[in-house]
Image (cartoon, rainbow, N blue to C red):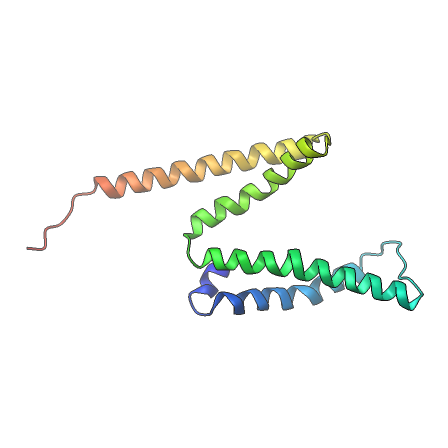
Length: 141
């Protein structure tokens, strides 16, 4: 969807739309989650929480989306899909190597499924490239 929108609008606009549309949805989901958490009562604590949430939304959230859509505007969608699929695998590896966290069976299964999907996509691209190269060329003389 993002790649389709990038053909019609600038990447900054697509980033802003995704960010602005996602915030109310995430707020609604969090509000209706029913988790047992309380908002701080003091003004200073409320300001600290608001500043923290805003900082987390803008720096890693908005900045990463901006970079993603900038990159997506200049790369093929299939390459962007491969990179996006590899993100959860990198997270599991970092968690395992840096934080010495045990990998669960679910994570291992997801890791294997993503690798199989990446392998299948790359083989499919290889075959389509080979078939296009092997196709006879028409002369336009």
